[in-house]
Image (cartoon, rainbow, N blue to C red; front, side, top):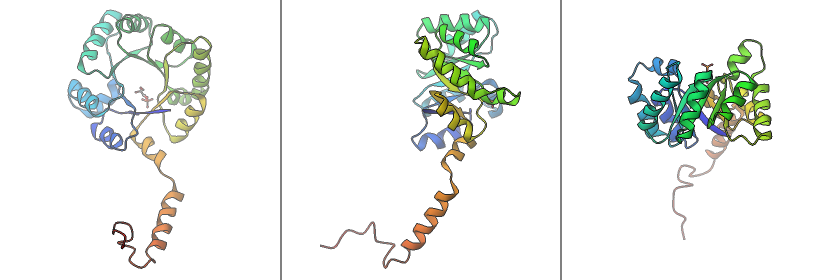
Length: 225
Ligand code: E4P
């Protein structure tokens, strides 16, 4: 499973990229607005940090506007994925951009038919929002399972991005449900790495290690011949 960060915060992206585990980034207008920086500068900086796809979203509501914005965004960096909302105009724009070889991430997907339509329109990525579905008492993870099964049945190539992730268990369950990618906030990515038994285990190992004579030089001192 690929791990994306769902943020426009360059410091957070750099921190996770340095660990060597970051496969891509998704942004949206709300996340970009939160950073209070120039949009193009933010996106191009992210694209330099991350080699995988970086989603940047269009804001027009008509397909011609989406296509114009999508073509422009795609010139900003080779790893841009143009993010387009699932509307009739969004589907039309997705088809035009996909036919031009531009990767499209169709966003704001809340149902199986919406996901299927986005895949048929040629989306490289489809983003079902599991957290926002759970928020209104629906089952976001079931949508991931259903989409995975239907895409496989019809040989559709879109990758499923489990989006709107709220906590580590969403990532675990999305992986089991067959999502190709999980895009998550920085805090969730950090939480995935933590376990109290790991911390306690390190403490105990180091306490025992310090009982060795010359423990400070035991690893980095060349062996005596
Ligand atoms: C996905 O690409 C979206 O940016 C994101 O996951 C939305 O999540 P939210 O419901 O936390 O806003």
